[in-house]
Image (cartoon, rainbow over all chains, first blue to last red; front, side, top):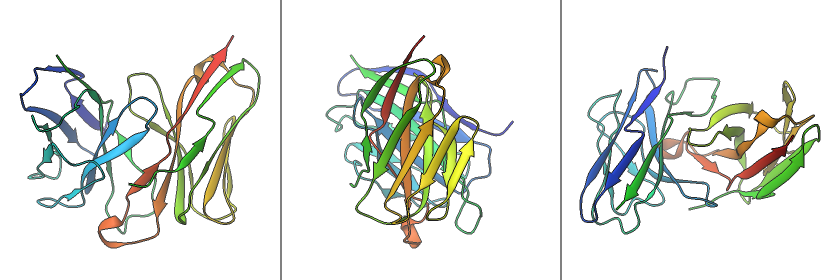
Length: 116
Length: 115
């Protein structure tokens, strides 16, 4: 079955370390997104990519980096510059522009990152 | 970045009661979506709305796309314990180009159902 896989489910990081969260999809979707979720604040967009080898900053990109070398993969690196990285991270994907109807995003099951 | 105004923030209801939540925005959207998130999981799409005034049902769930294209509501009838979770509204902007497909999310409504 097609879907989005995020790994690991739980991740612990020491302060000052970089850490990479994995997101893989086999839905043949063009666009992929990374969101951060904190209690009471909903979903905030970190980065998104409409096509391979291209990505744009979202609303809270500082301290994060991404790459999109393959259509199926959109890893997120949380760098030491991110001052408060403890959060629940969600990856999502959707078909590209021109694909109708638009059923919105398909989400992964998330990665909970904790800084220790 | 912009977020939708979703209310209420939380609800505590008895099993069997009906539930209503809504979202408003200062921007016009061409698509409204409603998601449900179970604890520790990603959101799952419940209902998608594509036209102003559209009323769509999915089992006990009913959602409407506001006439002004700046609001939407979700109703759940005869709630059951498995309805517990966080409900998010999301709007998709009209603009194309790099903004195409970008969703803006509400802050979520936390629903608790007492048996």
